[in-house]
Image 1 (tube, rainbow, N blue to C red):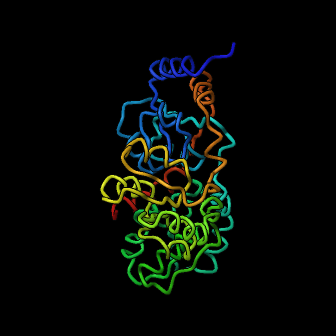
Image 2 (image 1 turned 90 degrees about the horizontal axis):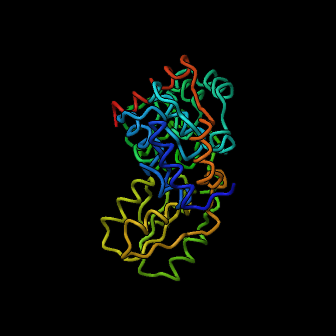
Length: 305
């Protein structure tokens, strides 16, 4: 039997209560998924907030590394990813083995790991960071040599903001943010001369140089609420624009590039959320030994941030 959207939503709400579940949706998720979620936000923020609830099950509408982070922070809860194929190309650009080989070549370096990485990679790292706190985390490490993984563009942004020279960058990147070009920004500014430009620090340096601010997705949401600007050019995955319009109906949001779409984020649908709750799949469980070492890197970040 084929269900309509209204019936799918009703069944999700029924099963959510029955499973004692909470639904989390990243800012890049499709609008209909954001609407059914209990919490919408950044990946780490969502896992932290979920950990403080009494939910027994977490349905994480995002990508695999986000569900892994929820498993790391919420070991007593069952974590479900509605589509097992929903991964992150940047996270896949580094493995624990390849990191350990690099660490052997840089034995005194402190490994700063962007949270957009697998649990195994976090477990081999010294400290994690987010796009929002990466600059402060690196500043807190004094003059130590740093290996920043896996996002070279976030690492370049951090190096610029801190003036640090002894920082080595892993050659990873987000394909979605890499699609945003300086030409896209210039074209959008020409068409919207009064608009403010905000971009994600995963963008290339030449894109960030043209922006008014480089911000995490939660930072973008805060900026949109607080700015007096009525028009804002958004340089990140276009899924966030749904939330921005919903929270700021009096403002205009212009995508820097309509090509900035993450196909993995769009794999999750309402139907898959329903199936996840119905069949309790696909469970993401980080093994205890990896979880504890990965959590240590996350906890070190949280102590500083």
